[in-house]
Length: 204
Image 1 (cartoon, helix red, strand yellow):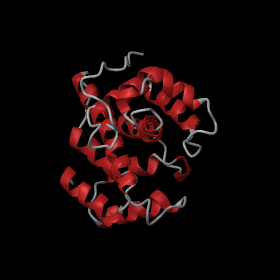
Image 2 (cartoon, helix red, strand yellow):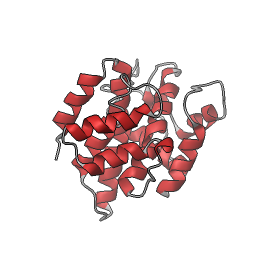
Image 3 (cartoon, helix red, strand yellow):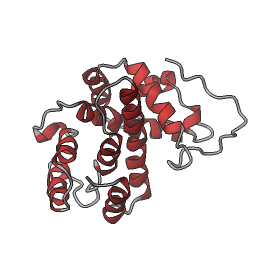
């Protein structure tokens, strides 16, 4: 089993763009939070495997920026590096065009967190303090209706992935916001937020 440390080394080997590295960390934050939640519910979850999968999901984006090279060619690199098949399959399944269906809880969770983490980051950047602490589900849903905002983010994937995972969309958005708030500084999303300021209410 590949460790988180090794996975991060692979990410940093292939990704030089700081924003893309932070996206990997943001998805990791959300997926890892779900791993803890599901484990607490008594479901069979391997937290480190989930963490590694989230970190590696876009590791080849800079060298394979076009579909279907990403993540298909990236999967071959991971295979050569000895990354387990369960992780590689989950990474393949997070791209709808690979033909790999999302079946496991890990695969559905990765898909549900990927586009949303990117969108939450975009929403945070347009807040006055440029902080994830100012983001809530209501503001996210409002931005989702604005087609000119974060055009590259597929709103349909955000909506459909939550349904695949079997969670309410607003609850899913709130859950991921809170997961990213826990690591705001690492994600570059603390901005000028004052830690003594009252928190935005993120209840669904």
